[in-house]
Length: 186
Picture 1 (cartoon, rainbow, N blue to C red):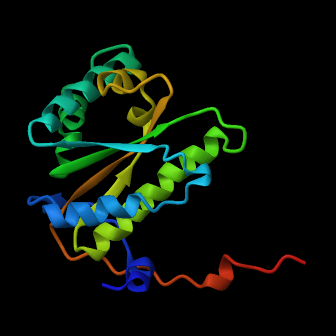
Picture 2 (cartoon, one colour; picture 1 turned 60 degrees about the vertical axis):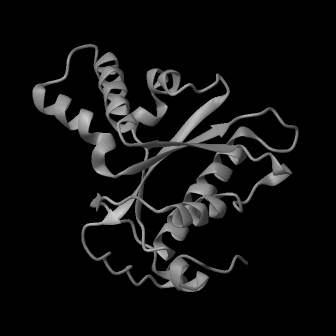
Picture 3 (tube, rainbow, N blue to C red; picture 1 turned 135 degrees about the vertical axis):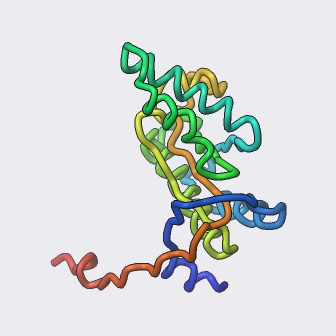
């Protein structure tokens, strides 16, 4: 698929199953991240791959973090849902920004670079026929999740990228009129 076709038509695929991306697909997806806009060439991003039984362990971390945040045990239904969150796809990437103090590149811009890397991977996954979607939410900012995943004090989770085989044909990208979003400033 050519670049403009992928950029114009990419959509998220929420229902994902095995198999996960093969090695060639992974390398293409990962290499796309490395071309993200990156002021100062800080390369502030890194990604943890979570697959196989590690997804079950991540579910346990999510449960402990959610119960700690709630200050009480979750209901049986909430507990089950939380434990299954990492099982929504065969491969999860945890998108992490390593924040550095820099005279010209504020922390916000470093996190935006990680976001650009995730967007590049979403588009590359679409071009490769791999289903993908990006999630954030309270667990991305939860200190227990960060600690259990081994993040340093200067690192932040900027989301979870789910990758796998779409269970159904991706929906058609909505037709948006560029003129509704781009105007001349005078």
